[in-house]
Image 1 (tube, rainbow, N blue to C red):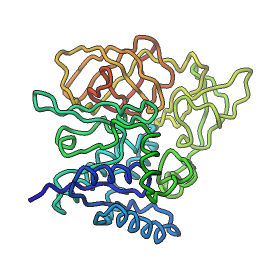
Image 2 (image 1 turned 180 degrees about the vertical axis):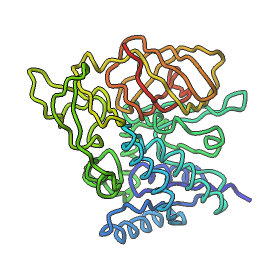
Image 3 (image 1 turned 90 degrees about the vertical axis):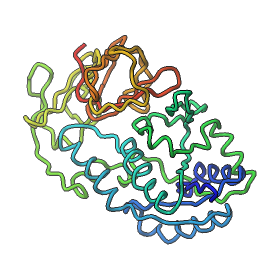
Length: 352
């Protein structure tokens, strides 16, 4: 029986070109579209029609998967619970492991596929030792290795990334030349299930997160004002603190147990490193100490660091130079050159 590859088809340009390239390479293809339960109701019928037309244009069968229950449990509940604990979550990293290469991959396998392709800008290689290696996409501006850094070897074994060696400009050109009917992206927002980027409103309404006002203090414990709910803040944030001063304040810590927001100046944001938990090593470290570069947020630059392995899934990261706004709940991704070594969740910054 011929190998069947499933392609996660969103209706946008990246997944459409990925599907087109696989078809051109002679792949036997099945298009999967998954529903999160947070799609705009007025858009659902129109988007379904668009997907059907796109699948017809690509010459692939389309299956729609309802992931709403798993998405609520694995992504939305995690998002709300993280803010309740004073952490700043990264639902996109979690979605790739739990939903796309979790629920959707399992559905693809159940439908007879052996692999799942996506439109991510990353590259996968297999080493002489049989292990899979995850590398950045060649387009540095579109590289999405950060979001896939917590995939397992089993998940990588079944993953296909047709766009990893292309730039976004090349993808756009190929879509135009093929006259692919793709939808322009919706208005940019960080989290797909948060309407209009209103995090605080989503957390209190959809997330039913209770709001309790409390004190704002500086790093010396002096009270400066009152906040209206810790859920509205993240480490490094400047806006919304509303404490007049000669120089702006930034969020330094969120202390849930005391319901207290701790603020300070830029120097108070600096960290010498961070403690990391839940580490997944795509490439197991050869020693208890290794030197690598670390990215602590998707939009941040990589920083040289010394990583001390403290247990099977724990590590401490020591930056070569102090770094600002190291945020509990975010993902720390370890790189050597353009290869992902592993990734874990930031628990706390280390004092500079």
